[in-house]
Amino acid sequence: MSRIVIVDYDMGNLASVRNALKAVGYEAEISPDPAVVGAADGIIMPGMGAFGNGMRKLGERGLIDAVRAFAASGKPLLGICLGMQLLYAEGEEFGAGPGLGLLKGKATRLPDAVKLPQIGWNVVEPVQTAHPIFEGLDKTFYAYFDHSYAADAVDPADVAATTDYGRVYCSVAARNNILGIQFHPEKSSKVGLHMLANFGRAVDSSPCHQRV
Amino acid sequence: MPLAKRIIPCLDIKNGRVVKNVNFHHGTWDAGDPVELARMYDEQGGDEIVFLDINASWEQRSATLDILSRAAEQVFIPLTIGGGVSEVEHVRSYLRAGADKVSINTGAVKDPDLINRSAEIFGSSTIVIAIDCKRGSDGGWEVYLQGGRTATGIDAVKWAEEVWRRGAGELLVTSMDADGTRGGYDLDLHQRLAEVIDIPVIASGGAGTLGHIAEVLTTGRADAALVASIFHSGQHTVSEAKAFLAQKGVPVRT
Image (cartoon, rainbow over all chains, first blue to last red):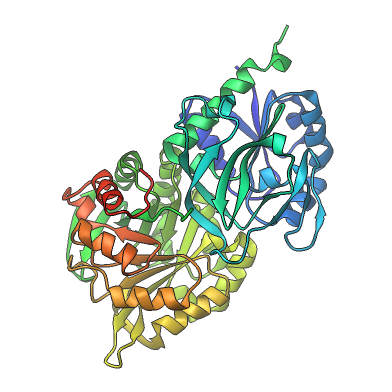
C-alpha cells in the first residue's frame, strides 16, 4: 500500500481530506514533518485561508524545501484550494509574495463584479479530458468551491480544466506529477470522491514508489 | 456561469436526535438519526447539510460534537453547524470536530465583534450569520433571539448589512412567521435582502411544496434554500426537488 501524506501546515480542515480518502479506500497520514513528507509516495496539500499566511506557515515548519524537493522527485503531488494556489510563482492575497513556484502563474483576486468569496457549486469543464484525474467523470461536472483568489497568467499547457466565475480561470492544473484542484474534492460528493480515488490510483501506479 | 442554487437540508438536533419544531415552540416530533439522514441527503444530491443544535447551553454540546465528527467521516458535502456559539473557542471546537462552517446567531447580536474576530481567524467563508426575524407593523422585519423568544428592536435588513460588513461569509435568514407553516417562504424579506446584501443568502422558513422552493430561488432571489419538514417527512426527496427546479430552469447541481 502506498503512503499518502497530507501536509499539515495549520491552514484548514485536513481531517476532511483524510476522511474522504478513507471512504475510497486510501489511508492517509496527516503530518507537519518535512522528513515524513519527503518519504511519502504521494502528498496532498489542502488548505484554506490567505496565501501569505500559507507560505509563512510552510516556511516555519521547514516545508517549503520539502514540498519543492518532493515535486522534483516526480512523485504525485496534489494541491487543493489554497494548496493549489501556493503551487504558483506568486500570490497577492494580503500583499504580493512568492509562492512555491512549481507552476508558472499567480493567484489573483476574482473580479469584484461577482459575489466573493465564491461559495457553492460551479461547473468544471475539463480541457485535458484524457487526464487520469478525470477518469470516469462526466464531460462537465459540478464541484464545490470556496475561494476569492484563483490562478491567473498561467501556462496554457498546464490548464487541465476551467471554471467561469467573473472570469474563466484554471480550476484544475496539471503539469507532469503536479496537480492542483481549486475546488474541494473532499466536499464535492461523489464526483470529488471519485477524483480522490483517481489520485490514489496515480500514487499506487507511480513508478517512483516501486519498492525493492 | 451562475453558481448552482443550493438545496440545503436542515437538521435541528437535540440530545443527539433530529427534531423539527413547528413554529419554534409548538409540537416537536422526532425524525431520526442525524448522521444517517445527512448521509441519505448527500446520496440524494443535497448540496450541504446544516445542523442546528437547539439545546439550551454550550455544556450540552458533547453529543453534537460527536454527531459532527461522525458526519464528517461519512458525508462528503459541506457541513454547517449552529447553536450556542458565543465565543471564538466555540467556533474552533465545531470546526475541529469536522464542521466546514459555523453559524452564529444570538452570540453575534450580543457581541457583534465576535463576527470580526471569527472571520479574521477562520476566514469569512467559514462564518455564517443566522438571523431569525419577524415582520413588524412598520413594514420591516425585527431580529429575534433565543429561538424566537426575545425581541431585540433591531431591524433585520440593517443587521444583515452590518454582519456582512463585519466579515460574515453567508447569511442564513429565517422568517419566523413562515417557519414551520409550510405556507411558503417570505419572498418580500428575501427580495429586500438581495437588494442590499452582496454575500450569499440562505432562505429559511416556510417550505411546504417544491413550488415554494423554486419561488424563493427565483422571485425571492435567494442563493440557497434551507429545507426541513418536506424532506424529513418523506413528502419529497432532494432528487425530486432538484429535478423539479431543473425543469423550471433554475440552475441546480443534478
